[in-house]
Image 1 (cartoon, rainbow, N blue to C red):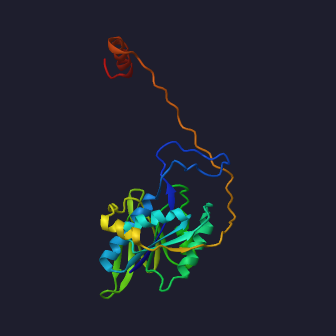
Image 2 (image 1 turned 120 degrees about the horizontal axis):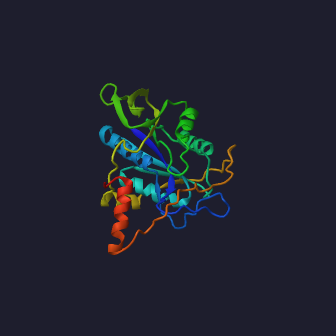
Image 3 (image 1 turned 90 degrees about the vertical axis):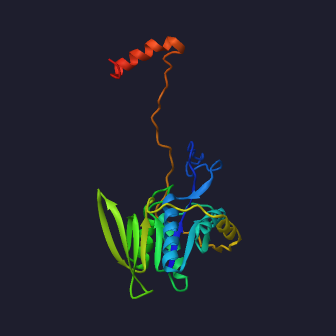
Amino acid sequence: MQILVCVKRVPMVGGKIVILPNGQELDTRMSGFTISPHEECAVEEAVRLTERYGGGVTVLTLGPAEAADQLRDMLALGASRAVLLETDGREWGPMATAATIVDAIRGEDGGYDLLLFGNESADTGGYQVAVRVAHALGLPCVTGIKAIEITENGGTALGSVRARREYHGTEEVFDLPLPAVISVKEGINLPRYPSLPGRLRAKRAVIEQFAPDWRPEGLKKLGLRVAATERRRAEILGTGTDGVPVLLALLIELGVLK
C-alpha cells in the first residue's frame, strides 16, 4: 500500500503574534517551526496502515528549503520517503498549492492508493487543498475524518476504505473505492515519539527536491491584522491582615459566604 501525506511547515505560535510592517506576513524570526497537528496525525495514521498492510509512506510539502527539517521529522516518525517542492519563501494560495501537488502526483510512477491531508493547516486554516486535489484528480474525497479502516479484497488485494467522522453528536460512515483522498482531524490517533534510530535514519535520508514555477492565483491578500483581545486588569485588594476584611466583603458580595 502506497500512501502520500501532504504536510505544511507552520510557525509555532506560543506567545505574542507580531505582523511585519508591510501587513502581509507574520514575524517568525523568534518562532520555531513544525507541521500542523492534524497533519502529524495523518502521518501517524499512514505509518500504522503500512505497518499492517505493507507498502510505504511518502511525505510531501510545498515550502522553502528550511521545510526539509519538518520532512525529516516525519521520516523519523516512520515515513519512508520525502519530497520537497521548494519555493522561494513566498506564500502560495490554496489553488496554486493544490495545482502544484496535483502535478507532482501525476509525475509519480505507479501512483498512490491513498492520499492523506490534515483537515486544515494551523496557520491559514483554509480547508481547501485536499478537496481541490481530489477534484483535479477525479478521486472521491471525505474530510474531518476520525477513523480509517481498509477493506481487503481477496487476500492481500486492497478493496476500499471506510472512513468515519463525528457530526453533531452522531457518527457518519463513508465507504470509498481506492484510490481516495481523506483529510483527518487531530485525535484520530496519538502520534508516536520518534525513536533514536528513526532520527538517525531521517538525518541520513535523501530528500527529493523539485522547484515548481511560481503560480499566481485569483485570490489576493489585502493584509493581516491581529484580532483585538479582551484586556483584564488585576486589582490588589490589600496585603497581609489588612486585606482580610476586603476579601471577606468581596466573597459575601459574590455569594460565596453569607
